[in-house]
Image (cartoon, rainbow, N blue to C red):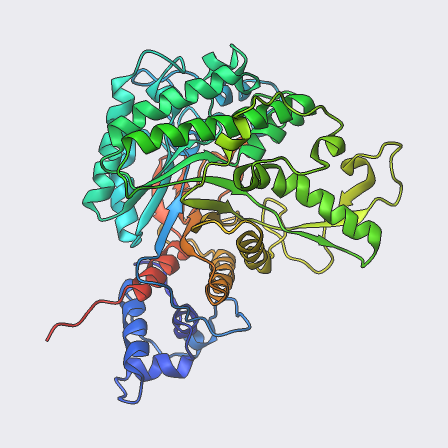
Length: 523
């Protein structure tokens, strides 16, 4: 292995002192057996060769303020996540139909440098290689999405068997490596044919989604035990229809709330279909991107702003799913009419889930606008503080705020009490540099993951029913409007050659998972 780690690196990864690593290397008998086993697993994972030179001792990973040796339940799902559109490529291969992002990428100025996902990370052609790499990373689970238009090119009716066959092979390959498949049915890539018939502005799209769900449930239900209906419907509705920065690029807040309602209805109808065709022991959930809200001052105006931001960012979808109603003030703050809601809609939407998926990246720090607009909506009255003084940021210009993950999990448990909670995305984009060989040091991502995982251990002490954690992302990929300019992966992708190179963070995560599942010694 080309990457050379120091003893201090190993100590930081293992959550022990440099002296402890040295004593393990020197086979001293006074090291706790479990600590010794954890250190030995990490040494083996990194193929570490000891060299106690001054240069080696001087190296370091970023330090954290607390020792890092968390312990989680043995059935905890440690994984990574991707989405079909961001990694598969092959957008015109084997019968796949176009989706709204294919069309959006052709709009001038919509995507960084006009980049598209026609090749992306070429996962469609390299799936077997990628699954083998997942096994090398010791993943216990892999969250991926199905391409609706690869399975139903027109969104309805005619099924593309080649599309179903690809996911058959992916699921079987994962199971053969003892990796649990976690399937997301919708990750923003609406078939273009459905968009042309009204898209998420119509109830018919929700019904089409239910039919699509039945097709995949019948096909994969015997092998998939974790199902996610929607990924981040807030983004689909608000970014896609409200402000137009995502596909399909519409700019109408009324369209956004209409789309949001039909997305929730699609979720609800999909749950009904899944229950009919998957294993009784399987789990069904939905994934929301949640953003804890902080304020800059202790004033009534600031607290009111925090409550209004929470309604817009979080409760818009949480309240219907768990309480069967929209939060008071949502439509007033958006200056829109409520969506058309039939009598049975909210009862169906609030059908109990087996788990809630939470995507967490950062918080929102809110303050009253110094020069408020003439209107009274949230965005006219309040603003988000960017940058936060003294904060550190990812390449996405998102504040690194690990405490926010704990805040979100505790709040959701207190206010909504889902049966189980899964962190379905958490990760960071950094300016990763490849030396052309096997060395990709991304120590900032290692620190990011350590600090966020450390927060998870704390919430377990509060009896939050946390069942899994998924790093975004397995591979560098097509990052929507940012094209290929942002890298989130544990695995580096050289887009010119499609070569995969595991980053330092990927090796760290593999060693961490191995330490959570120590090898049992036989007599």
